[in-house]
Length: 456
Ligand code: OOG
Ligand code: NI
Image (tube, rainbow, N blue to C red; front, side, top):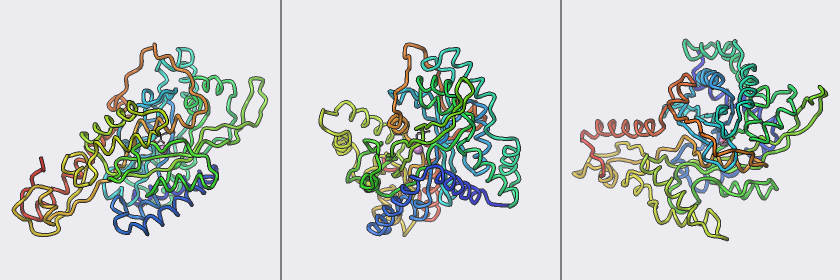
């Protein structure tokens, strides 16, 4: 049987090959990422690998896809499940954005630390909320649901192989077939797009048009990871590539990197085939796909995340004319966020793992044991996404804000509701990080033969 992680690694490579042939600028992005990572790794040495080995970081990608219904989402869960990718987290982008982004999302990724270390491939997956009246009136909802209900994104052979991979496993020949079918399911379709229907949806939301106006789904972007996103941003600009105005997420500052920083280059014109109302076929172009890059930092606890959300709100309030968001954010960060990993750990803001390295001294608190050298503390990397940044990425690539009527009632979604619709358990990311931290402390206790107490 082919091990799940190998299937996942091959899936990530196959998607990258396909996407790279569809979006040539992707190759430029990957080349520049490699330059940035090589240089950063050389300059920082082992310190640079605290949030992931250079092998992992260089190979690391996340994809983004968009589907139109609970049925399609539950099929996606089966397909990604074959690669050991489970849904984690819930993101509501409808309210995270000024523009019209009528989707709720989760991310499919490996959940175990050793699986993440072998290959961390993940896919941010959004589902169109067709019954949200702020975006779609009853007639549009009905037509959307009929259109989406009548297409088939994932064929029966693919789904059967995926189920088998999750169950008893697959031998090489079937594994190769699964990979070919799964990759193909995310290929840009050559089938003509109904121009009037697409345009009508686009007036409401470009994202809705991309999901509900096209007969298939596709990889929207495939994102490499870098160790220094500021350097990447400058180099891409130097190559004449138009980047969005700001890096999303935390600012560059002298303290530890937390959560996730992201930026993207603007969507490119891509040729598509359209069908006019009179039946004629024409060529045209769409701008829905873009290139994105990410830099990952330390995973924050619930308390740390609350602080992050408050800081983001404070940046919004404090921002003055003529001062960039990043400069304001840096001020706010310096005021509120501890400037060392030690500080993040002591205040219970970040997740860390601990390993035993020497005999325990009399002080058996976590930080006491770290200070005496009995424990070594390592940061846990953030493996997930940020709704506000995701909305910023969506938004900065829309040429038009679309339309929404906020006087209409929203439809409530949360993690449980999305899980029920996806027919899958959606993990709470905080639980995963906390369990990882706890396991490392329990193992260290067993090795040191002491009971370790928390700092506060
Ligand atoms: C997803 C946008 C969000 C991220 O990395 O946060 C995103 C999409 O465009 O479908 O990719
Ligand atoms: Ni992305």
